[in-house]
Length: 279
Image (cartoon, rainbow, N blue to C red; front, side):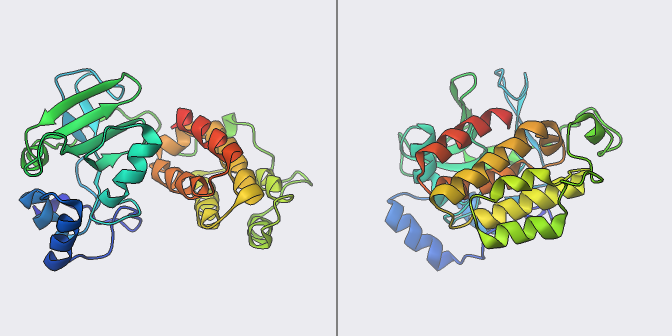
C-alpha cells in the first residue's frame, strides 16, 4: 500500500500528517465511518499524487472510452482534502453525502454515503456527459484496480509549440521581466495587474513560474484585485491550455482559481466559471 504514493517535489495534495485519534474525532463529527483501507493509507501519508494515473470503466466518459484519470487521492483535511467536499458539492451542484477523493471540477470520484454510513461504494461523476455511476463496491477494490495507462507521446520537445502562440517578444520595449511582474504583484494595485500580460512566456518554466506567482498572490485577494488577477489568469489559460494540460500544470491553475473564488465577487466568479472550459 505504501508504494501507491508518488514522491514528488511539488505535491499540492499532500496534507500535514494525521494520527488515528484525529481521524476518530473527524469521523464522529461527520457521523460516518471512513473505509479502513483509506484510514491506513492516510496515516502513511495524508493524501497526495500517486504512481497510477487511470481506473478502468465499462462506460464511456469525457476522458476516454474505457477509463478515467486518477492521479491523486485527497487526504483528510480542508484545503484540497476530503473535508472540502461540502464546499465543492455546493459549487458544482453535486448530491449531498459524498466525500470527494479525486477530481478537477468537470469530473469527480467520491466515496458515496447516500445509502450508508460505512463501507461506501465509489462513484464517478462526469459533468460533460452528465454521468453518475458506481465504479467499485469499496475503496479497497478501487485501489486494487488503479493502473498506469500509457498515452501516446504528442510532443517530444515540451517547448516546441510555444512559438506558435502569440506572446509579446522579449525584445519588445513594452515587454516586462520577472522582476517587474513580482513588483506589480507586490504592490497589489488593481489598475496595474493587467500589465502582467506583457510578460513574455517562452517556455514551460516561464509558464510554471507565472502561474505559481498568480496562485501565491491570489490568497486572500478581494474585490477588484481578485477580478483583475482572475482576468490575467483567464488570458494565460486560454492561450496556453494545451501546454498547461500536457505539462501537469492544471492543478496549479485550479488552486489559484479556488483562492480567487473565495472573494465571492460576482464578476470574478463569471471569469472563473469560463476558465473551467479550458481545463
